[in-house]
Length: 45
Image 1 (tube, rainbow, N blue to C red):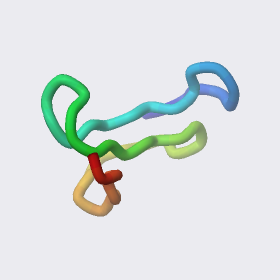
Image 2: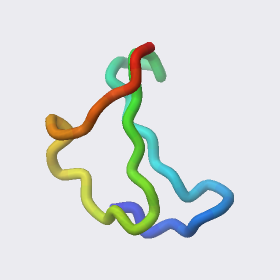
Image 3: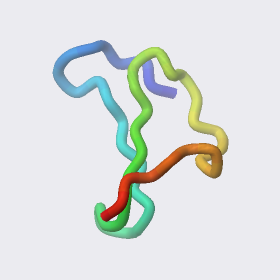
């Protein structure tokens, strides 16, 4: 759950690989749940 606020550290990043490697996908404030990351698009690393 991301209950952050816009500005500052409000975005949560999910990385595709260990130790911040691979692509990532973000959960912005107002997107409360990340229960299934299979429908997210990861950036290319």
